Image (cartoon, rainbow, N blue to C red; front, side, top):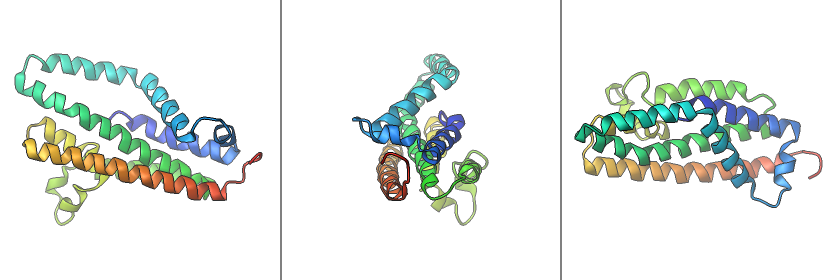
Length: 194
């Protein structure tokens, strides 16, 4: 969805800052590095994806005339927020791999290719034999598969609420994972000035 084009940029630019030592200026600032990184990333994403946001708003106006479409469309707003956070935490966790590896672009490319499949962009997850039920529970499914099921009206209210709770749970888990990876990475950081 929204961060699709900028995920790679987030990870690669963060990895570049770690590898070059530019991350030191953020670590030594009086503000929290997490807040700086989040607002810088969201700001870049908003500016870079302004066209996508305008198209999304136009679709919202089109669906206002269709009551069922409007109902399903507005259920997407909270899932859209979960999508942003899930993709953001995964992207920065990939970027933090630069504390251990010099080149992370390969990891980022592999992640991008795998996440497209695991999100249900290629094949709906519910028709994949054997593993489909497990793939529906991954964080990737909350970035595309579940929002599309909500929009298409295939989920009832209880299923929609469970998607919101699952998305919130994945946001919390990935936030904790990103913090752990960052703290472990800082122990290996050899930037000048720290």
